[in-house]
Figure 1 (cartoon, rainbow, N blue to C red):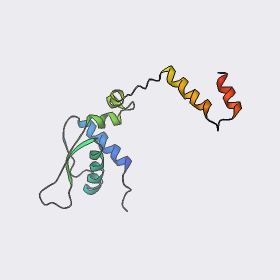
Figure 2 (figure 1 turned 45 degrees about the vertical axis):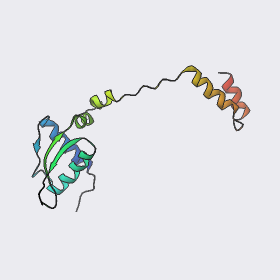
Figure 3 (figure 1 turned 90 degrees about the vertical axis):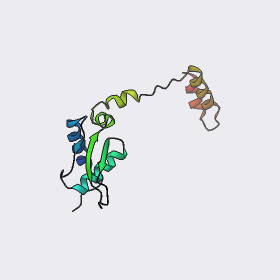
Figure 4 (figure 1 turned 120 degrees about the vertical axis):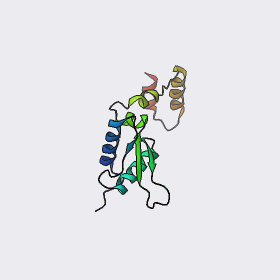
Length: 124
């Protein structure tokens, strides 16, 4: 019976195993459960930027994963706090007081807002 794809538990195990060798490139040939499943899941992780992946070439069909390396983004993905990716990717949104007032005024001008709600908003 074929395992579901993507296999999150296998992907996590692959990432953890690659993290142990970071920053080295690792030979992944022969990793369990089988080459096709490992290749499929590593390819998926590669497309999301979590691993670098080298596959077999030169008329070898099907293609199999040969070497892999976890990326900094992959290490951050495994970190409980999201790693530096989360820290560096923080976006600060600043809303000016006038913007909030304009939003409230626009709400009060809408005809579909009940009078009770309008008076409640005005009393704030």
